Length: 236
Image 1 (cartoon, helix red, strand yellow):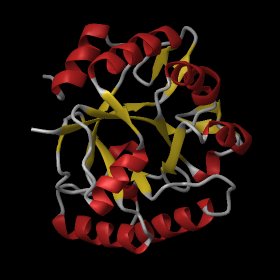
Image 2 (cartoon, rainbow, N blue to C red):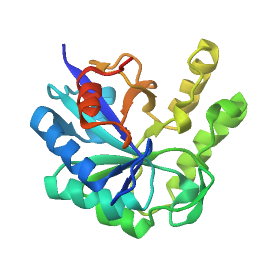
Image 3 (cartoon, rainbow, N blue to C red):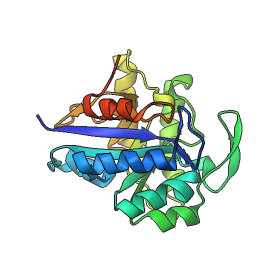
Image 4 (cartoon, rainbow, N blue to C red):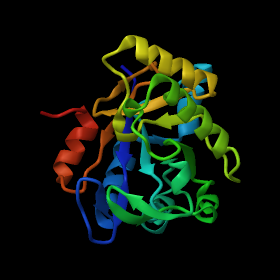
């Protein structure tokens, strides 16, 4: 059975490692392993699979980063470039080019100049206007959030692809009516797919493009656990 693995990273640092941040050395080791076992693909490949039915290669893997931290350029990008591995960054509109409070800490985010330097290797997609949890918004405000995010991102110089990553991984998974309404809002805004967390491996062809599962990569976990998660998905 053909499958698609999608990894979710956030930050990369020289020495700091926690549940949202891997070190440069961890990243290098992980990417070398990925390159030896899997076929890294671009988000554009996934979109073509969804929109046109294009087949994905066996053992395909998509590597993604959430939020658009500046260290994705300063620390992650050189590693990916050195190994010629593409990746995707889901950016928050209001974070681009700013130092702002996120997760209760002042943090630096990618500038558009940095983004433009990476576009040959990196695809960019949507992560919301302000990183709001969609489940905290009314049905009407969810639709506005999606439409305004897509509309606003079109004012930037770089191209943003028609894919979305749920902030906090949150979406109405237990309410079919709400989820159907959300999918209609995505379709009306031109969004072809959306990524959750889930920590499972996706079977191909993708059954529901608005709940593609990702495996979260944590800096506080061992390399063995990383290999197990990538290889088998959700672990107890």
